[in-house]
Amino acid sequence: MRVTPSLFHHAQTLLAESLRLTSAADQVVAAYFRQHRELGHDERGFIAELVFAVLRRQRSLAARCADDLSSRRLLLAALACVQGMNRRQLAEVLSESESKWLAQAKAVRIEDLPAAVRLDLPDWLYAELLAGFAGDELERLAAALNQPAPLDLRVNPLRDGRDEVLAKLLAGGLAATACPYSPLGIRLAGKPALAKHPLFVDGRIEVQDEGSQLLGFLLQPRRGQMVADFCAGAGGKTLLLGALMRSQGRLYAFDVAERRLAKLKPRLARSGLSNVYPVRIDSERDPRVGRLAGKLDRVLVDAPCSGLGTLRRNPDLKWRQNPASVGELAAKQAAILAAAAKLVKPGGRLVYATCSLLEAENDRVVDAFLAQNPQFVVRPAALILQQQGIALDTGERLRLLPHRHATDGFFATVLERR
Image 1 (spheres, rainbow, N blue to C red):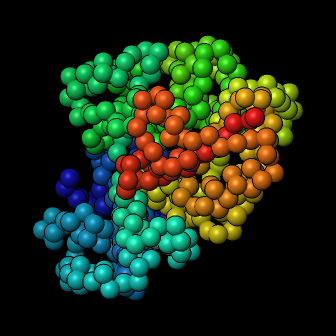
Image 2 (cartoon, one colour):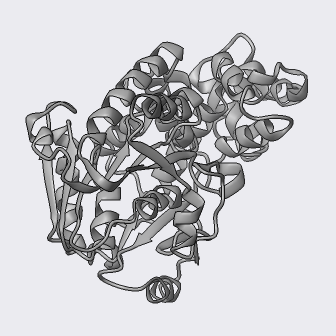
C-alpha cells in the first residue's frame, strides 16, 4: 500500500498511544478505529500491522534509531528495516535529512547487538526463556513470536463439516487450508474481513487459534455430561466444548468479568447451542461454584496468565509484563486450580492450561498442585489426542510453540481424579 502522509499520521498517533502501555494494544487499536470510521479495511490493516511491527521489534528498532526514539523515527525504521520499503516508496513521508538518517539506521549490524536486543525481548524474559530453550531454538522461537499470526478458524460441527466449509471458502475466493492438528481447524491466508461473511453470520465458523482448539479435545467432553469452562472469557473454548457435547448435557461458562461474558451471548446465539449457562462469579470461591463441588465430569481451567505465548498477536505483553506480575499471576493460577479441582467428581477430568511460555505459570503450578492433591494424577496428553485421531506428541503434557507447531504458545496438563 502507498504510504501517504495521512496514513503515516494515523500510524504515528496510534503508535504514540500504544507505547504508553496503559491499555492492551489491541484495545487501543480498536478504540482508535472506532473514532476513525472513515478508514477502509485495507487502510486499517496497514496501520495496525505497522504499529504492531514496531511493538514486536521495539528493541532492535530502538537500537537503529539511536538517540531519537520518537514514534515517527520508529515507524520509519519499521517501514524500511522490517517491511523492506525503499526510499522511493517512502518519498511522500520522508524528508531529506531523514533520508540520510534512515540509510544509517539500515546499516546498523543487528548481529552485533546483545542477544536480548537482537531478539526483541526484555532482559528478564530473555533470561527466563534461555533457561528452557537450548541452542538456537530460542532464536527460532523469538523469530516466530515476531511474526504476525495466521488467521485460524474453527468449524462448528453442529452446523457443517470441515470439508464442506473449506469448499465454500475456496469457492468464495479465500485461500484456505485444513489445520494440521485440529480436526475442526481451518487456516486462512491473509486477514480477510469475516464479520459479515455468511459462514460467520450463520455460526458455521468462529475465529480460534488451532492451539486453543486442541484444549477442547484434551478435555474431551461427552454428550450428557456436566462440564465447566472455569475461566470462560468471551467463550471461544466454551462454544467448542458445547459442540463436542452435541449440545447435550450442561455446560457452565464461569467468569468474573461481565463484559467478557457479554461477548459470549451473540456468539452463543449464532452457534445453535442450547446447553450453555453463562454465570458471572465474584471469584473462584463464589458460592455458586461451591454448590457444584464433586459433581462435574469435566472442568477446563484456561487460567489467567501472562499471555506470553500470544506475542504474535499481542506483542505489547512482553513490555507490559515483568517478574513481579508473573509471580502474582502464578499465585492466582494456583488458587483457581485448587478451587476448580473441587468441582471434579471421582473419575472426572480437569485440564489446566495457559497461553504462557514460562515454567512458573505452567509446570510449577501443576507440580505444586499435585504435591498437595494426591487424589489427582496426570494423564498423557498425546494418548488422549491420539485416541481422537490427532497425531501430536509433545510429551506427557501438551506444549505448543509457534516455531514448531505454527500455533500460539500453549501449555496444558490433563489431570484425572482417582
